[in-house]
Amino acid sequence: PGILPERLEDALRRVRHCALSLVGEPIIYPRINAFLAELHRRRISTFMVTNAQFPKEMEQLVPCTQLYISIDAPTREQLKAVDRPLFSDFWERFNECVGLLARKRQRTVFRLTLVNGWNDSELDAYAELVRRGAPDLIEVKGVTYCGDSKASPLTIKECPFHHEVRAYCERLAAAAGPGYTIASEHAHSNCVLIAADAFCRDGVWHTWIDYERFFDLYQDWQANGTEFTAAEYAAPTPSWAVYDPLATDGGFDPAERRVAGKQGAAKRAASGAAAS
Image 1 (cartoon, rainbow, N blue to C red):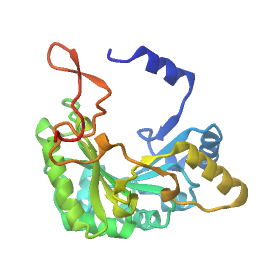
Image 2 (image 1 turned 30 degrees about the vertical axis):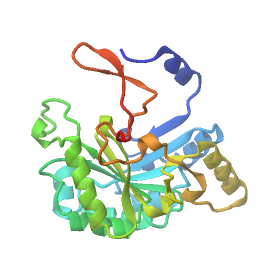
Image 3 (image 1 turned 45 degrees about the horizontal axis):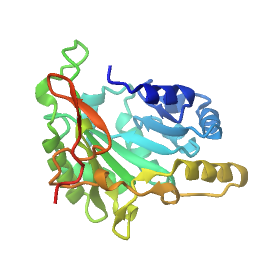
């Protein structure tokens, strides 16, 4: 329900993106670099997510389109409670991976899932991780309630509203110090993006990706060892996706339609930018 037939047909005809996430820890797959190379050969983008517990594998990882670290908590105690890690030296592994992220030249992201009362404090600790890891982007999303489960004690009370995620990101960007600003959001996903100021060129945010440029750069790196950076395949952010504190439905493409309301009636969404 809700799927546009023409988009489904297009998606089945050609795969364009691959998210290496939600399947355990993909970075420890023995042939992960060969797999990434094959995806890039087919001009399929790669979004790699790691829980930052395998520094050796992270150091050996070849360039991918975007590399995420899940920053589930900023302190040893909170990370142990939230992630229930397997290794006794989980905190040392985590910090080593954060340091390695700063050495990566392609797009890097801190990924935070905000859980009220669990990991929404300790701003200074988060800010210190940002300074050490120097991510290009910080993606903050409110946790989604999926119903009662014996595997998780989370309830609807732990799920922040979008205005709470926004307010937290404003404080986090300020705590991180000069160099980071809220750049974009997608209210429908309860998600806000903080970006390094280097991605704002001549007053225009460049948080989107030029995928074809990435594939060309990767092929040159593979053939000739030519290093490349995230800035070389950054693309301008559409005006409707740029963060506006006055927007009521920020980040939703005004050309799209969405189903809303109890009757399921389709309606055109308001622009992500506030009305003038």
